Length: 248
Image 1 (cartoon, rainbow, N blue to C red):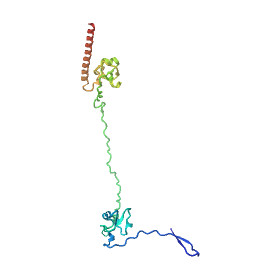
Image 2: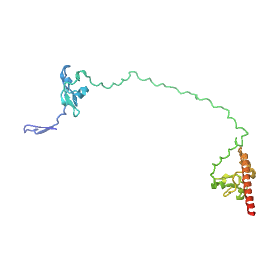
Image 3: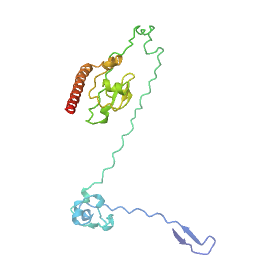
Image 4: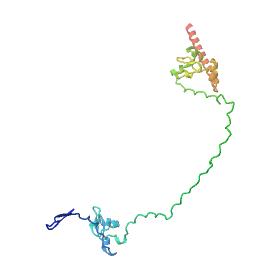
């Protein structure tokens, strides 16, 4: 803010403040002729840099004051020539609006009748009078247990009405120790060490029919019965030999 001093002591005289106008931008350079050597003045960090970057932004006809970047100076007689350069192209203009307006919307009258087909007057067919009461196929037998290692205590879990019944019949193992693995009213008994092979459930009547519904179980039970009989015969023979030795 500049303050102007008023002269004189009359009425209205005194200090009258005034606001200075904003400084104008740097005046434009006067036109240069094509052969003017000032056309070759360009800014750069060195002469090579100035000669390799011939942009109007680096043109410095007024000397170092035209170089805005710190460290640059104005170099004379570079290989650039401002007379051969043009300013950067402006952004492409937008497409002018079309003179023709968009077409007016079409007013359509709704139809008086529905577009879908009429519903049928006949009801759907009744269900069949003889529905099936049984499943279409026999349920599959639950999967067998993984082989148990020799000496595993679970080898002594067997199904039976009681412990003696389980030991006598050697019908079916229940390795989990749960009664759920035994059919019917049979229970899972532990500590049945004399049974080695499953003989099947034939000795339990109806329970046997349920348990042997899967193919191949009867054959397996027969083989198991033979094996158990062999084990029992061997044990009996061994007992007789021991008795004879004692008597001798």
